[in-house]
Image (tube, rainbow over all chains, first blue to last red; front, top):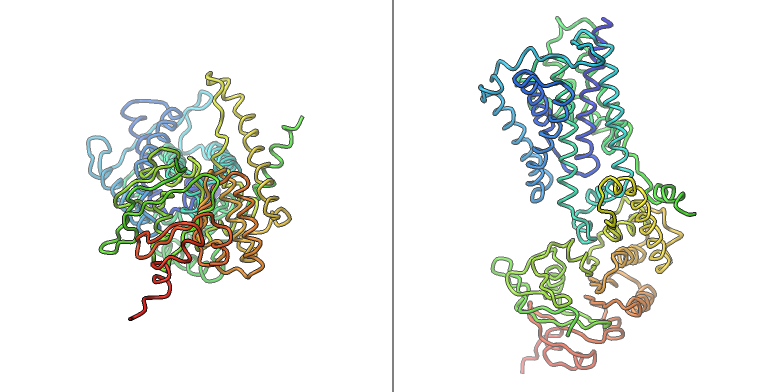
Amino acid sequence: MLNFILLIFIYIGIYAIAAMGLNLIVGYTGLLSLCQAGFLAIGAYTTAVLMTTFHMGFWESMIISGFIASLFGILIGIPTLRLKGDYLAIATLGFGEIVRNVILNWDSVTKGPMGINGIPGPSIFGTTLSSMDKPAWIVIIWIFVAATYYFIRRIIRSRVGRALEAIREDEIAASSMGINTAKYKIGAFTTGAFLAGIAGSLFAAFNQSVAPLTFDFMMSIMILCMAVLGGLGNSFATIVGAVIIVLASELPRLMGISHIIPPQLNQILFGLILVLMMIYRPQGIIGRIKLNYAKIVKEEISDLEK
Amino acid sequence: MPLLYTQNLRREFGGVIAVADVDIEIFKDSITGLIGPNGAGKTTLFNTITGLDFPTSGHVFFKGEDITELPAYKITRSGIARTFQNIRLFKDMTVFENVMIGRHFRGNNPKIVKNKFLNFILGRIYVKKEEKDIYENSIKWLNFFNLLDMRDEYAKNLPYGKQRELEIARALATEPEILFLDEPAAGMNPQETDSLMKTIKRIRDLGITVVLIEHDMKLVMNICDKIIVLNYGKKIAEGTPSQVQNNKDVIEAYLGKTDD
């Protein structure tokens, strides 16, 4: 049972990283993206292929996975220059499905529907971790969660964050204020994809296997739910959202009644949570935290005066 | 040479010709009024000049350079700012933040140091210096409009007249050489309009050229050095306020033709 709870917290961490990345795209920049699972898949498969076929170490594979995912982030970021709202969401949805289908059919590299098994665990301080070493995994993954949180916080509290907020508020006004909206939008997509790539890489190394069916549309929706449930535009809320969604989806197994309740119930539960949220608390459980940039900048420049 | 001029500027939407081969000239330190009945193509002309829309044909020249094809953000960076007919503030941001965004692109990191490592170390200081510049200039522009005591208010909570002023403050924070105002007095009461007239003159006195679209004839006739009249996308008259007031075509466009 303890093992199972540890497992849940490992998954929460992995999803939280991807969801915080998505929150940067959806919550802060205001672009609806439905392909976070696609970026996760790219990250996971890059790590899997690099570690099994090319026998690279985990840490360097992870960095490369992040960068490959962000390359695809640029690729999907370019149509966002022209598309808005629902149309952008459909384009990203299509992109996620393309990724899954390429992985499913590119047998020579991805081994198609069989997936890639036998991915070695990461080595750390001379020992190789396996999926059994759950406490160690929890520590590693939650260090990444903390790093991601800090990374996004730094972006949001800077001038870049201010520009992203302006773009979300009114893109036309932002561009007529001299802000290169295209650059910032692609930047947001790329960063969000990078984080999903890292999450995917951790996912692959922890499970020591990857299969194409994992990264389906439902996963993208699940990650989006985490961001929306906690509150868009709030990284801490996204982590809370990840905790709730993962717990909810594992609830039958946690309570030991998974033999009575079919797994499809998860999706009903998700739907119910979302509908109730939309009715009673559309801003999310915690909601957006509005930063006061005037105060932040004043603090930041206070030590400049000599 | 005019500061900004257009050459045969034309914008068609399907079969509708919103702007029909218009040539306008804007001279430095002047206040130019752009008037005409509803649907005359005034806002479309503004949009094509400021890069929010692209002309079907023709050119826009600013300081002698062709800026027709430039995207909006580059046009703003070259020194052209604008406001919108239907106020487009960042509603859920504070008054102060709105002006800060206006200054966002100014003072980009001065790459004095070529060495990447040194740049990385010094980067923090440069960032801070830029932020300081943004901060102080934002205060300057808020002071110009007496908005400083409302700095932490959300833009959407301001009274209408103040919102218009904030939008102008935000545009001025980009440090333009030429400012396009799209119906700045719309929805204002007579007192607010009077103070707006004074503000526009103060802006001109700063050395900023002003072009404005306006339906309030008192305002237009009082402060404009030159007036350009559009009707059905065509320029039908231009000149000083008194010349335009007595122009037969202008009277016809506004009041209709007599049937005799």
